[in-house]
Image 1 (cartoon, rainbow, N blue to C red):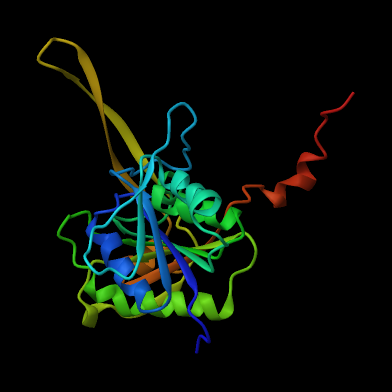
Image 2: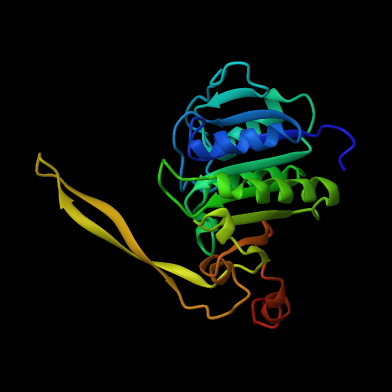
Length: 260
């Protein structure tokens, strides 16, 4: 049982009015004191981008009457939002940062491109326990209700137990009714990728342009992956880190002839 109300930072990449973040705010209001700093427009697939060549705007906003939370709409990326929150808006480090609930999957390789997860990773860099939540439904009418109990449980466990330095939780939720969700699986990231191509098109003025498309390919047959869990009715949790060092390869690399 939590003894005092934690300070919770909420952000996302779908924009501050997206249904997913509105649901996440509602859940977090049951747990702690909530401050929202989120993009003023969709910022999906922005990865860890930051704004350095344009001015940043971050304004207080009221979206819901009599709301418990304080909210700020930011013109920048999800990572900008976390930086603004920790350096400009909050008077102390939050106890937790939650990002999402994203409309669409951030499992497997998608975590690299995800603005949702990059916001959580930025919080982790700042030493703040952080979780990214995603639902496997891109629709604006996505139903987040079946996931609410699980989201609350995961958050309460992080607040109670903490996370190791540099570890962020990547949580993905299958598109199922509550009674169909089998539970939670702790997983590794599946070895999967996008087979991408650019569709070449011509606009009405005769200028050629390109539209990115692709097919998601999962060749990982393991039953301990996030993709397996999601395909089999489980919520997946992957402990993620921002240290990209391939530690296992350092010893071998030192044996190369790289020095005079």
